[in-house]
Structure formats: structure tokens, C-alpha cells
Length: 285
Length: 316
Image (cartoon, rainbow over all chains, first blue to last red; front, side):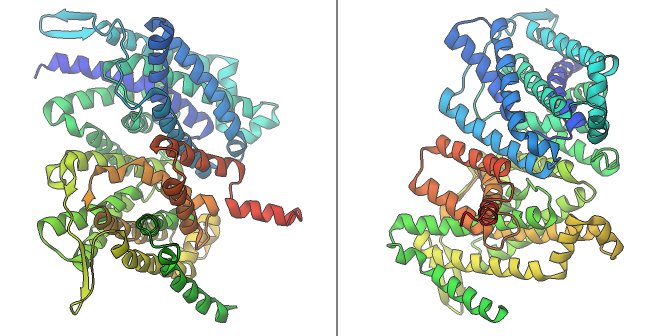
């Protein structure tokens, strides 16, 4: 095993995990909402970008923003339907509703895009960089840069702008925020749209690594969950660190132990954390 | 009221037994009825958690699959009969539920749901990769179910032969749920869900209640999986598929939570749609997902909620 190569693989994997997870981190932190359709949104993001390339004939760098835009619009629609339950903070029903949406997306996508694996290709995926026996692709570099940029921007917006203050106040106490004239419903919609758009961006950058199927998305949910919980729910910086940490862990575990059981190992890691530090990981109340 | 309820329930139960033959007795009818009974029992396991603890367990496919794997592996490799495999299914599911119950003891709400969900995905990965559990091929060639006492009883494969077993399992499950609803554990669970402070003030140990209900729910889904293994004569990692998870949840919420017959009627509606009014596998997914989301978005109390609203507005 080449340690340097595995460390690079870990960083590459980790930037992907962090990027896919960021929307959820914000959603969970601000709205306490768990979106079980997250994995299917990832799948939709990948397929929309693929369809834009193969049907509309646009290139990769146009297709991914199209997917981000469409999923953002879908986010408005979904959150609009869920708004009543969100305002009631009926979290049990919401979780099941998102599960239903996910199942609907899976069936719908299989109807529209077919059941075959498709090749969603980024031109940067085949552009390799080699130093001796160490290699990575320009796509990996792009993913890493986009991740750092998005996390930096998000941190700035949440901590240094009025918009961020609105989101944080709704996260802290939605009822009190509303008393101060803040439109909590609008904040919830905004946060949900961000989640959908961010996962579409993640899919656009990460999904070209392997063929895409309409049944993908489950592993992404688990890894996202691990990132969010390890990083501390709602913590932007924490999820970035947790993403890279999990990436390094899975790269080393895959190389040293067994690539087939990496999700299981990531989950075991999570269980360990939950048993050791259950407080501060659960609900805020 | 109570004097009428018991005979009425017995008459209904007896009537249920003859539903497939009254409906014509065609193979497709028996297949549908047996499937409804099996899948309803599976749903009752999750119902115990969702209706009475108010939590969303996304891990009940683990117990469902554990029952199927226990039955198929022991029947194929060790030649165990139906009683023995059923006992094994119960024991395996109890052990798994105790482990998962301990791991999730201090988790609530979405953390509980996510951990159980993640556990199910990991269990699927293990089942798919571990040769001991048949790996990606699964366990094939499950022999006919052998369920005899003193040489008499059922030896059967196929839906018509398994129907009496499925019916009996469903009736036992209904009896168990009914007893649970009236038991100290059942009422404590509801109190912990509705008013945790009151429960604590009355000396109810919320964690113990949650743990016990979780463990008690596992063998129900496991026994459904046990019979499913004989019905299909095959068990594979597809028992972890989200189909079963979405089916359980939809069956519970479609009619209304905390209703004894709710999950059974819900399952029946879904399976009838998928058997007789199917619009293709992916189309059925769209239907099931839409029904699940729409019910909770529009009538969070289920179809019973619509009824209540109509009565209140004097529409009926």
C-alpha cells in the first residue's frame, strides 16, 4: 500500500462526503428537519446533469448548473408542500414524508431514465496528474476546490451577514424569531432549497467517478449522516473536518482491511461515537 | 360492549380464514391473501414502535430479514423443521433487537431513526457480502414448511398450502397487539410518548419502556420474514430493500395510527393495488411513495381522519 496515495484518496473521498453532506448539516441545524430523500436527490442531481448532456447536448460545465437549478426549484416545491408540518415541527411525520418522496423519486427516475447504468462523464475525470506512482485527476482537484469554496462562503454568510443571522435566530428559537418579525417559513424554504441545490452540486462533481443507476443514493445518506453527527449537528466547520476525517478513514480501511465493508465500518465508528457521547448529538432540547 | 367484542372478533377471525376460498380460490387470490397476512404481520412489528412509542424505526427490515435468513439457512443446511426455525427466528431477532436497542437507548427522534436506518443499510451490506449468509446469491431452495404436532399438521409449499399458517400467524399477532395495548407496558409506552414528564412523575422508567417495546416488536417482524422465506423458497439481501420499509410505514399511516386493524387494512389496500391494479414495478413505487407522502401531508391522521372531519362537518 502506498500511504501517500491513500492519503490523497482519503482527501478526495472526504471532500466529496463533505460536499454531499453540507446541505443536510444546514437543514438539520436550522430546521431540525431530516430529509431521507437526500440520497435520491443526489441520484436525481446526477441523472439530471447526465440527461442535460445526453439529451440537450450541453457540455458538462453547463449541465451541472442546470441540475443545481432544477433541484433548487424542486426544493421550493417540496418544502412548500411540507411547510405546514415544518411549522408544527411534526418531525415524525416529516421524516416519513421525505422517505415517501425518496421512494417516489426512485420509481419516477427509473420510469424516466430507465433501469440501465449510465455513464455520466466529466471531461476532467480522464485528465490525470501523476507524480511518480502517485496520481489523481483534475476532477478531484475541482471537487476539492469547490468544497473548500462552498464551505468558506457558507461560513461567511452564516456568521458575517444579516441573512446568516436570520437563519441562526430561527434555528435557535423559531417562535421567538417570529415574534421579532422574522419570516421563519421563508427561512425554512431557503434552507431546504440550499440543501437540494448543494446535493445536486455534490452529485455533479462526485457522481462521474462511477456509472450511475437510479437505485444509487443509500450509501450517500449513511455517509452524510456520519459526517453530520461526527461534525456536530449544524456545525459547518465540523462537517468539513468530519468529511475529511471520514474520507481518510474509509480510504485507509478500504486499503488495509476490506473495501466491501467500508460503509459498515463507518457506521461502527458512528455507533462508537453515539455510545460514548450521546449528549450533544441528539435533539437540542 | 366487552361481551359483544370477543364473539364478534372470533366471528371476524373465522370469516377471514375463508376469504380466499369465498373470493374464488384462484392461485392469484391465495397468493394475494397469504402475502397480505405475511406483510401485515411484518408491519405490526414496526407499528408497535411508530404507534405506541411515537418513534420511526427504519430498522425493522433487519428483523424481517433475520427471520427469513434464520429460517432458510437452518432449513436448507441443517434440515430443521418449521417449529425449530420459527424458534430460531425469534431468538435471533431478540438478540439483534437487544443489541440495536441498547445502542439506540439514549437516542431520540431523528437520531433514533437515522441509527436504525444506518443499521439496516449496514446489515444489507453484510448480508450481500458475507458468504455465510449466501452473499449476493442469497439462500436458494428453501424446502416446504414442515409444521406438525404428533405427525399431524401442515407440510406445504405454495400460497394455498401456507395460507392457514399465514392466517394463524396474523391472528396471533392481532391477539398479541390487542393484549399489548391493554398491558402495563403498552399504556406506559403511550404515556412516555404523550407526556414524558407525567410518566417520569409516576415512576415510569422511559428508557426501560422504550427498550422493552423495541425488543418485543422484533419477533413479530421476524416471524413474518420466517414465513416469507417458505412462501418464496428463497431469501436474499433484497429483504432489506426500501420496498418493505416503505410498505410497513405506509400500511401503518394510511388508515390511521394506533388502530388495531389499521396496518392490516393498509397492507391489504397496497397489495390489492399491486396485485390487481399494478402499473409496473416502477409505477407501483410512484404510487406507494405518493400515497405515503400525500396521506401525511393532507390527512396526518390517515383515512380515519378524513372520516372524522366529514362527520364533524355533517357530510355523512
